Length: 140
Image (cartoon, one colour):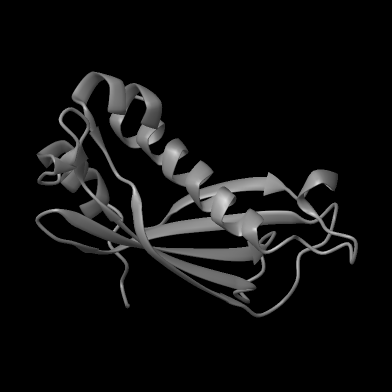
């Protein structure tokens, strides 16, 4: 089952064409990732990084934009885990208008698990793996 957040499209999200400016989608995804940690692990992403000394920087991202979002729209963002490896995770973020079923945008992001000091690769912590696994996608 997907982790879901809802948010309005605000004035500062749109460009001169009155459509969501495409880099904003990556920011929305990061906000959902941060919210995921709070909801699933009881710590914000920032608190998790500080307390566990493990972060998840983006190492690959791709997106498809199918239908625009405009100022005032209500967006529903669903985050699902596609894969959890030893040291990385792949998530799919799907954007919908309100309760509609048409996917308006889709973003796939791969993050790598890194230890913060000294900075370098590490394994995905068990508690994070379990949280990601609770939101495995039914289909890739």
